Length: 62
Image 1 (tube, rainbow, N blue to C red):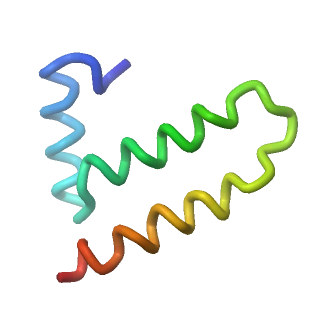
Image 2 (image 1 turned 30 degrees about the horizontal axis):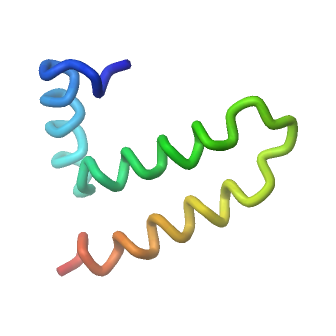
Image 3 (image 1 turned 90 degrees about the vertical axis):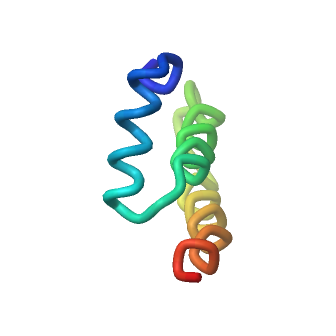
């Protein structure tokens, strides 16, 4: 996985910084997706994404 190597994390940090988000937010989004892995219906995934992004919004704006 890209985040498992120092080179990969550096690249992800650079891209996250350019997009204006923290790498921790991206990791939470990835974790939410991985938690749904193998399920036929990903019930609640969009709501979880919304929750993560809503919690990050004040941090990112301020």
